[in-house]
Image (cartoon, rainbow, N blue to C red; front, side):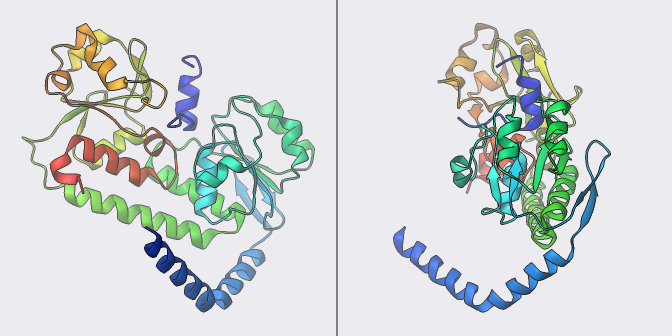
Length: 329
């Protein structure tokens, strides 16, 4: 697990291991479907007319998609989450072993984990494969897929909100869902704006210093600069004690004491039982403010590390843990 951790983090694959209301929602959805059936058909025709489409992928290659894809293989959970958010439920025919959101993705054919099954991907007869710049499976496997006549679009390793927006736009282009992509981005921006508005009320005196631990002692990996977590902390007016480091970096127990965060957030509780108790019980941490103030909390991994629409949810989770009086609902 530890040797793969930097790759897993970069790819965003560290995953967290009332009836009447539903009826009302269903009725409303049925009514909306009836009212919008004709515009939806027009939208589908418009999407189809946008093809062929050519995009430049993360490798700098120009990839042409001749027709709107009916079958898509997604090799990373972040790509999958975006595809589902774009309404491509029926088009997804293959996903990675790490995919766990949305629930429907767990029922889709699996194409492998750290090493993908080239033969299986080809057998699924996809119209396009959404790969990832951090995919450890290697260029050779992707080349075999391309040699079989399947377009492979390598998606950038997004590490900022703006880069995530670019990724959503690109997947929207490739799949003929550009309007849906624009709406997702608008919704995300509105969500972040709402959080930032609340954060503006936090005074400098009340501002907290934070350490976000994604692996846990004794071999800790923590979030530094140029990560979603850094951008989230800035948005909610919190200080990242690791902001002088780039990316996800290892950290010793001694350095935790030196940096002395007010709050420690752990994203690995899904695979380490009693993560908070374990973290607080390390003898070397006894004088760390986060421990003495009992400000060590678990937060969900996926929404704070995956490059997709749930980053707003992840930011809200961090905000509620750090400033419960300001953000807790």
